[in-house]
Amino acid sequence: MKRICQFPKLGLDMSLFPVNGLTLLLIFLLVAPVSPTLGEEKSMDLSAADQELLFRVARESIQAHLKGKEAVLPKTNSPALLKPSGVFVTLHRHGRLRGCIGYLEACKPLLAAVQDMAIAAAFRDPRFPPLREEELADLDLEISILSPMQEIRNVEEIEVGRHGIYLERGPCRGLLLPQVATECGWDRLTFLQQTCVKACLPPDAWKDPATRIFIFSAQILHEPPRKQEPGAL
Image 1 (spheres, rainbow, N blue to C red):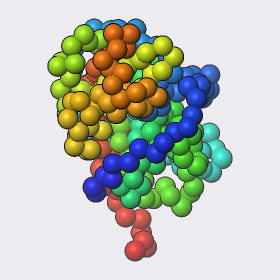
Image 2: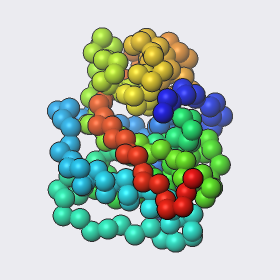
Image 3: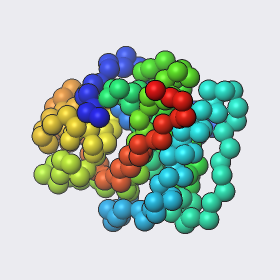
C-alpha cells in the first residue's frame, strides 16, 4: 500500500508523555536530551519467529487495551527480543499515519518496548484521537529498531535512505525516522529542514553552531499480510 506523506501540525508544547512511569518519545517531538553514543550500525539478528512474535504482541496488546484488559507479555528465550533497544512503532490506516511513538534509547528489552509503544501509538499520540475498535482491522504496523545515536559535525555525513536525524537546540528537539525522507522523496537539505520544523525551529536552524545534530539507522520491519478471518468478505 502506498503511504501518503502527511505531517499534521502539532500545536503542542515540549512536555513529557509518561506511560507506566516511562518517558515516551514522539517521532516528531523528542523530549529529552541525548548523550552521543558511538556504535556500529548493525542490524539486529531477528529470526522469522522473533519478528512474528513482535507483531503479534503489538497487535494483541492494542486489542487487549481496546477491550479494557491488561496486555500480557509472553515469555521468550530469544536473546534478540530480550536485548534493550530503542524502538518506534508506527501505525498506518489506509496509507495514512495513525500514530507513531517510540523509545529513542535502549531503556527496555525489545519485546517489552514494542508492547509499550504499540499501545502508546494507538492511544496516546496527541496528534490523533485514541484508536477505535473498528479501526484495528485496517491498521498496518511498522516497527523501527534504532541503532545508537552518533553526533555529527558535518551534515555531508547524512545519507538519505540510511540515516534518521535527531537534532536539538536549547529546549527544542525533533526526530524523523530514516524512512520518512525516502517515502516523501526528500533530499538531504529538505530532510534537515523538516527535522528542524518538527523541533519547532526555523528550517535553517541546522546551520546554527548551537544546534546539535545526530544520525542513526533503523532496522525497519513491516507486518506481513494477515490471514482473512473466517466469514470475512
